[in-house]
Each structure stands twice: as structure tokens, then as C-alpha cells.
Image (cartoon, rainbow, N blue to C red; front, side, top):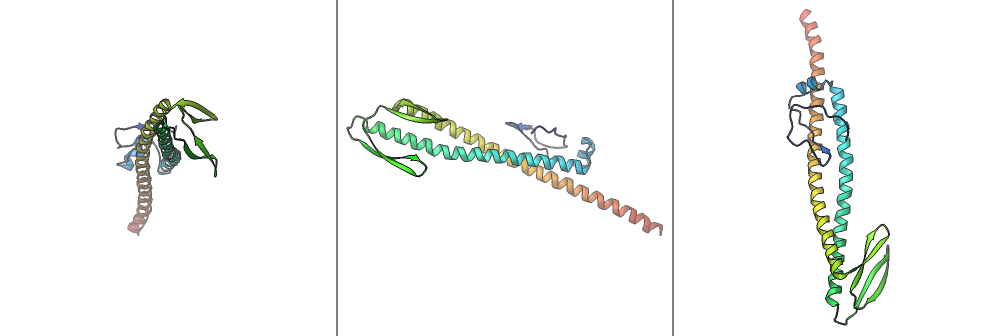
Length: 196
């Protein structure tokens, strides 16, 4: 969001959050327009552009949120599988498991005692870890994903607040413009009526 921000006559102390600029509440539209040098149409255009920028950022954050919300259960499932393998280690029991080979295609495997597991890291990379290392890595990944999700939720809430402030600002500027046009229409009519 690289547009320059015209100064408003109100607002809170927070100027941005993780690159998302804070919207300023316009208390007095007339003062705002005179200080910023904008006319009503320019101010409306600026704030509508800012609103669109907020919407684009919101779509990106929502996509990240969906990805994290899908990732967390996957990590938890992996932790459960590793814990099950560790619990069965040394008992002599084999574990019968179905696993997904491809979308909708499953295969059955008989897993004997094992000291290691292979974790899919993405980007066509799979690494073998001992069960203890895998558990530590997965727990760390789970903590990071949950922390990222918390930050993302806070970012989305901040962004929604900025969208609301911007929408209110647009409505206030529009209403001010309508009021000014009506005053201009009434003034010549009132002068003409007084002269007659």
C-alpha cells in the first residue's frame, strides 16, 4: 500500500500493523479537505482506492488463514502417528495402516518396529528422522503454526477495523459533498426569490 496518506483530523496512535496502514477517522470533513488540499471527489477516490487495497490484503490474509487452519490438523495427525509408533516400539506388534498415495488412492502397509520416520517437508523433499527428532520437529512446527495463526487473526481484526473506518470516512465525505451541493443550489434560488 504505497499511496501517500493525506492527514486526517482524527485517528488513533497506531499508524500501521505489519505493513497495513491505519485508517484515520475524519472528525471534521471540511477541515480535513482544506488541510489535505483535496476536493470531495479526490478525497472519495483516495479512500475508495485505500478500501480496495484493504480488500486485497484481506483476501491474502484469509488465504493464509485457511492454509494454516488446514496445516495444524495435519501436524497434529503426524504427531499422533509418531506417538503411536513410539508406543508400539519394542512390543513386537506390527501396525496395520492405510495411507494416501495420491488424491483418493490409498494403500495398506504393515509397519514393523521402527526407530525412524520419514517426514514430507514439501517442495519434493522428504527426510528421515528418529522418532524423537520427528516429535520435536513436529511440536515446534505446531507451536509456530498456532502462533502464526494468532498473529494472523489479530491482523485480520485490525484490517477489518481499518475497512470499517474507511467506509465510514467515505460515507462522511460523500454526505458532506451532497450537503454542499444542496447548499449551493438553495443559495442562488433563495437570492433569486428574494430579488423577485
